[in-house]
Length: 190
Image (tube, rainbow, N blue to C red; front, side):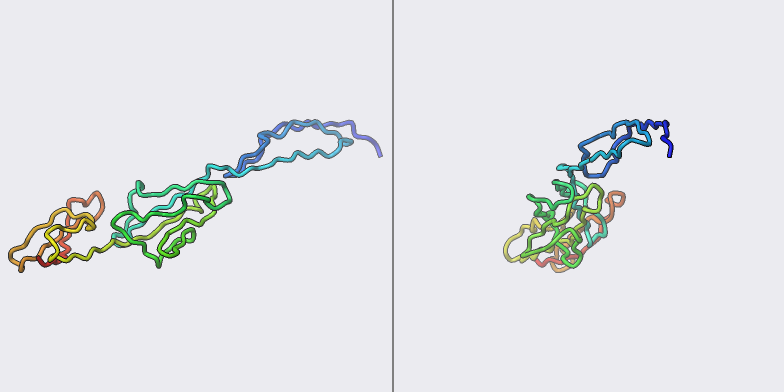
């Protein structure tokens, strides 16, 4: 068998990327090879990023709408691992957890909501928590103040024509329909 005197020059090329990981080598070196060249391997080690995030957002199951993004909780940590600290989720004021619709990345244990997902570079680690409006029990014999826990109370008035009931009007709809009000007629005896 004869020897082939032909050589091939391989150009350098960038190391393949893996979302959520950083390679220790950014480029594979150029190489010239011939038929007599030994095989050459270049090892690339990928290290998980420590700034990977997951977003926990909230959905108002009563109003059938997402809560404003300002309520979102952003958790950070290392790709491929669970969030080590600060993974307890606080439910926004005026809402209660809809425990029947927990996301895969969220658990409820003894009344504490915890994020348990593994962080990834895509959105598969995000979670949506469904909430219902909190209710407030009000005993009018204990004072005249309307409970602070009522949400979106825009106007409360005494209706002298209905046996001294209070009618609570709540804003409903989206920002586009914010001028509309719904007469909830949560009758509260005075």
